[in-house]
Amino acid sequence: AATLAFSAIQNNDKVGLMLFTDQVELFIPPKKGRMHVLWIIRELLEFKPEHNNTDISFALKSLTNVLKKKAIVFIMSDFLDDNYENSLKIVSQKHDVTGIRIYDEREESLPNVGLIQAKDAETNKLVWINTSLASVRKKYKRYYTDRVNYFNKTFNLSGAGRISTKVEESYVKKLLSYFKAR
Image (tube, rainbow, N blue to C red; front, side, top):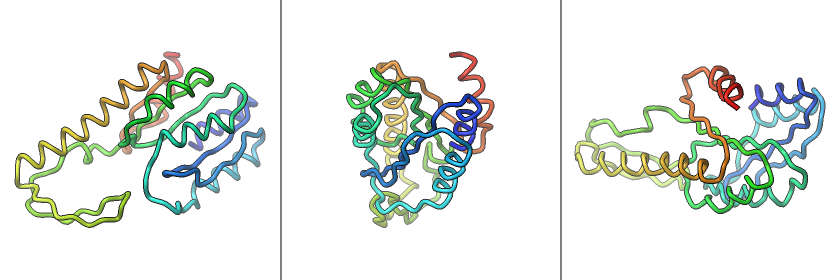
């Protein structure tokens, strides 16, 4: 996010920020200037969300309400959500949208390590999962793959750009190749 923000001010573009869960938690309207970008970066580093749930559709609808002029929009998330297809189509008709899916490859599948306790990041609910069962690992893999496929399909159909990057990858190389291709 900071790299994109600094790139925008090099271009003399305005930069804004919307942080969301299932609500808009923070909105900083777009503005020009280095001090404004530094404020945004400080907010990114210090921000503590009040809610845990994710609703990308709500964030996109909120974005439509606050951005009146055409903008370049980057949405950064793990995109382990669904039902945002219609909202994305609407936003993509007015704005140049790119989804940046950030993920850890260890999230792609469950290892066979027996009985584990896991905490749902959105509900904070603790559950026991028997990873020694092939059916459990298969069901998790299918859920994860379905979310990734939904992200790819939804962004393609809406005409929006998309980037997927692992947390340990060089995001700079990914961004540069994305911008060169466009």
